[in-house]
Image (cartoon, rainbow over all chains, first blue to last red; front, side):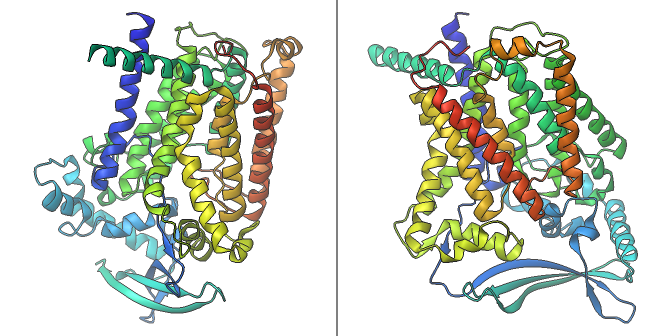
Length: 178
Length: 365
């Protein structure tokens, strides 16, 4: 193969290796592959005249012996798992809910024909293991182990005063762990 | 039609050669950079996966198109512990220049395998892949020709390897810029992409260090200009590569400035990319004069590297920073340290732009 042909072949391979994964993600986020050369775009746009800023937050609570809920420090609760994976783990309901997990939704709604080899991850044994995992972490935090409360809130902030104006609960789920 | 195809293919050949010239790095400099990149990955990034042994089995939710999706769950903890050992050993071998090519390939495979499971919590972070991919590509260059305990056999693709890394960097930037181009260029002073980044970091992640507070005083026109500058900057590297070496070096230097502004205003210390840019900005660092002064076998070279390494690790420990896969901003002290690194890299970039003035094709490697 001549130098020119080699270069052209290398160019074609590189174009496919870079372009196809990006195109997959660009047109269907669910198909985002790994590994792929894709940087996060963060292309959100803020409307400056929309008034108060709104931020979504997810908070974790564990039951205290007196029955009230205590807010947990997410970083400590998940450690040594990195805190940055907290949101996707919560979005996937800790893998506790086989029917409502993201995996199941993909399988059922988006690509029903695709065979998910990881379906085994949501067996009753594994779900029980995750319940034990959560109970152990609640115990380590000095709390009761009956359940875990996940609250999604919207925080409104005034950009001029930098003060929080109000908190609004968007969603609340209690996972029974017994 | 035939003539059109021929001229298109000539154009493509010309473009490929131009990119190879723009991205050319002499072997001596490449060898210095090998030590630098491997040390950076080993000391600052320190990829590790042993924490995955704590993951609970039903949290396994891998990306559909990934290695992890070929498995039924997380592998046992011992596999992740072994991966950590492989990563450290392979980076050490690359830094020392001992079976560096094989070590580079092993490192990349181990990194991708381990990361696939980390991202099986449901969130992919591609940013860390690019420096690792660069290490893989450069393993096929002649970067063990100097400062190595054992030279790898030249494969005749030294320039090609650096060109691929340059294209990967440019394409990665383009992937970030394209979506911004579609959303941020709206000629509307009532909207701001930069502020969407800023407020999120400031109010939810506590990124309030350095010059972050200044942003509240920025006029709408400046904020709009920042959006357009970011889009232009992120979409342009491929064009800079095609224009020539000086334009490419200028873009790389501007890129370091871009990351520095991000650090100052958004408190996002993305040190990895500037370190990657350095691959193309080290002209002269491995020149015959400096090699004569510090020949590869000179124990002073290794002693110096060991001291630098120890200092870097010591600084990190003193700062109380647990260098991990995440390079997102931590304590204020780390912000200043990152700023210092970026300033130094900026000076290297400016020096390189100055030196590459009037550079002609073919003199690169």
